[in-house]
Image (cartoon, rainbow, N blue to C red; front, side, top):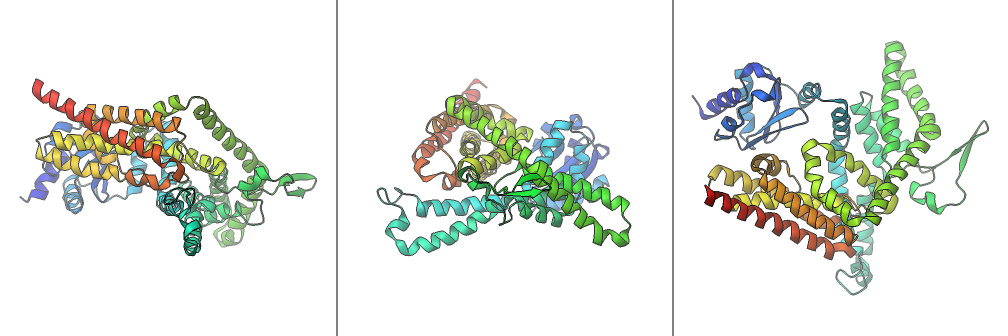
Length: 468
């Protein structure tokens, strides 16, 4: 029997047998499974399998970390043994979602909307970081930016800024595509809806507070403000849901021969009027209220906000609720020009990496060392799940010490007023997204999350070994 086949059989047995597996697929490094009863999983037996580098449950899915290049071979044997057949990621998500309560389903829906557009947003954040370096005063020269001294670089910085800003300027278009697709409608109509909300004929949302005379439409005596929703999240989310439901409603009632002529035009027309008359104004006010709420907390109780959000962000990742705060970050950036939440996210990721790195140094188990080393590097680059679920939560104390380090750093940077101008890579490269004037304070916070979790985890691990 081959090593791969033997591993697959051991995994099936540790998962509670083939009858406990509802559906199975895989990604680049992990088996992604829908299990009937996760209580039947023998986690100890699963961890003892040579090729298994960790396992965890998230959003109703049970995931087994195998590693790139090997996972597809194990998967082929796995489905042959279980007889489940090849499933898609959507099949697994649908199967897993049946176990979720309404709140978890709402959080999962937000995650499903924002995760597909994250690469565009993160890329834009990185490019804006480069622009910040070129245009930020005091980085290379006293009270002057790089392009102030080297004026021939100004146009290069301008082009970089244009490329970087595109994803944020047309953010409703990205959200519209992803949200309408999630809600069961036509993604193309979602794109049109999103772009319609930022049409050049509308007053730019970023100029709304600066303009005394707001242009309006007069719809049979009803004044409607001609305002765009650049950078806004809630208007396009709600409008996308409405659009998808109207489209599905019409498709069920209009004959196939007439759908091309009637469904899309009626859907866009009705949704468009609702968006500008009702949805947009209401959600715009709600978005501003949410922004004001968070700003007031961090203005009046900065240390407390840093302690809570910095310390407990990792728990949000465990529950999957961290995706909901992406919308808040984008709203803060749109309304205030920067977010004080995202810098704490970046530091929390680094803290989890430092705790995993301490386990790499302290452990004598070669398998744990391999997993801890690679997952620490991954966390430092912004992907924390392998470190959190594969190492830190497994031993508990590294996770707790990472939270402590992140809380201390959160207090420091919020008192210092650190903000990010964009959403970037949530790890060590995250400094590129921080406003240049806050780099010093952010690097102090970064030092804290590198040193504190590592030192606490390392010495606690040593003390545990001595007691044993």
